[in-house]
Amino acid sequence: MTQARADHSVEGDGAIPGFGFHPPTSPVSGIEVTDLATVHSRMSDGRLERVHRVDFHSVVLITEGSGEHAVDFVTHPCRPGTLLWIRPGQVQRFGRAGTMNGTLVLFTPAFPPHLASTDRLVHEWYGPVSRQLGAGRDYATVSTLVSQVRAEFTRPDGSVSREILQLLLATLLLHIARLPSPGEHGDPGAGGEIYARFRAELERSYASTRRAEDYAHRLGYTVKTLTRACLAATGQPVKQVIDARVALQAQRLLAHSDQPVAVIARGLGFSEPTNFGKFFTRHTGTTPGDFRRAHQ
Image 1 (cartoon, rainbow, N blue to C red):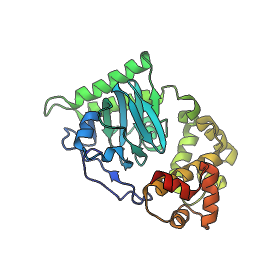
Image 2: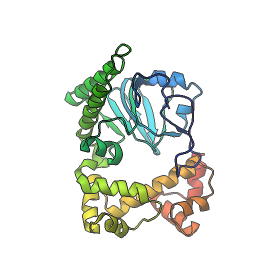
Image 3: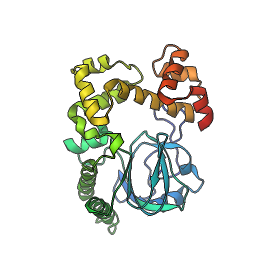
Image 4: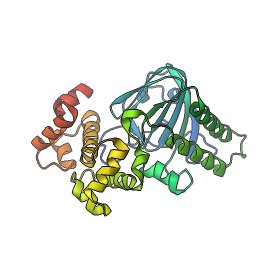
C-alpha cells in the first residue's frame, strides 16, 4: 500500500495482490504516518480500490467525509470518528478516492516495543476491524494519541525519536484494545491467554486440521476450556471459530485467485471437493462456484 510495488509471495493467498511496507520516505524504519489522500495520490491507478492485502498493520482514524472500507468481505461504513484496524494478511478494498480523509498509522509487526501486552495485540489478538467513536472521551483520547504519533513522526530531520514513537504507538494500541467492543463481534480480550494461544495455533494450523480435539491436545487444554474462551471472546464455540477461519480463507482464495476449486479444497485439508463444497455452502449460504462468479 505504501508504494506501487506489489508482492505476491504471501503463502496461501495465491494470486491475491499484496503490498509490502515500502514508504517512499520515513525518518524511522518500520512506521509511517500519513493520510488517505496521500496514499490515494501515490497509487492513482485505482489499485487501492480493488481487493488487495498488506503485510503490515494499518490503524486509520477517519476525520473528514464519508465512504466505506471493505475488509474480509465485510463492508464497513466510514464517517468522522470511524476507527479501523486492518491486520497483516487481511483482504481489503478502499473506498473511492476523494470521498473521505483521515490519518493512517502504518507499522510493521516488529516495530512496537516488545512488551507482553503489545506483542499479544500485534501478533496474536484479533479484535474488531471497525469501531465508531462518539464525540466523548474515547474519541478525544484516540484523536490526541494519533496526533501525538504524527507530531513525533513529522519532527524536523534528525530529531525524530524511534523510542518515543514506539511508546506512543504502544499507548495508542493499548487504548484501542480497551475500547468497548462493538456488540455482535464479541470481545477478543475477554478470552484471555487461552484464547490468544488458541488463535495463534489456529493461524498456524487451520489448513491442516479442523478438529477442536487437535487444538486442545496441542495447547494442553480440554475442548470445554477452549469453548469457554471462544464463547467469551467471540460468542461462538471453538468449532465454529475454527470453521469460520477456514471458510474465510476459502472465500479469499475463491474470490481473488485462479486456483481450481479442487486445488483450494486440498490446500485447506479436504480430501474430496464435494465435502469442501458442502462445508462452504453451509458456512456462507452459497456454493464455491457461485461465490467465485459473484466476486470475480
